[in-house]
Image 1 (tube, rainbow over the protein chains, first blue to last red):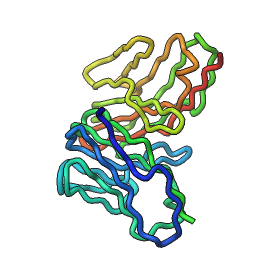
Image 2: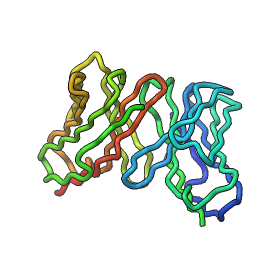
Image 3: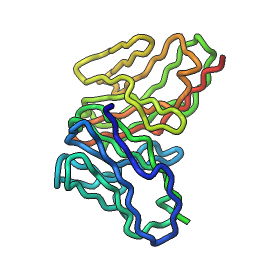
Image 4: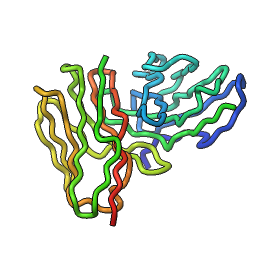
Length: 112
Length: 110
């Protein structure tokens, strides 16, 4: 089944403790992206990647890092999480940026 | 950059009625306009899309219209059913840049 898999689904952590949210897709898509979803703000792009070793900032990149060492994986790294990063996070992939996305099921992160 | 506004933020209709969600965009160079449906506890799912060289597209009970001159596009759902209840997002894309609207929570009352 074609899908984007995110882990974990739920995560509660403390301020400052580094964490990684994994994202993997099995569709050989070149384009991958991370979004955060907050009430009333819709989906805001954090980072995106056009292909292996090619990443770029979206609208809200502060406090986040990404890497794209392999085509299928695009982890999101929070080096020092803060409470304002409490949100619902989605990973998405696409053949390229000019096509619709396939989204993962989301990761609900709470930073206390 | 692109700015996408979506209205209404909430919409309640009776089963069998039609529902219309409208979006406007600011960048006339945007050329791809997808619509996503997000059910509770799930990620958004692409339901229909339209490109700038097309004015209307239909897929069973859902249709999307695009007015490039006015820079707005709309989602139309006919004969609504309770399973259509969800949050719907519009988006506008140009190259690598895809921007989403804030979402519309549609409730279909049986």
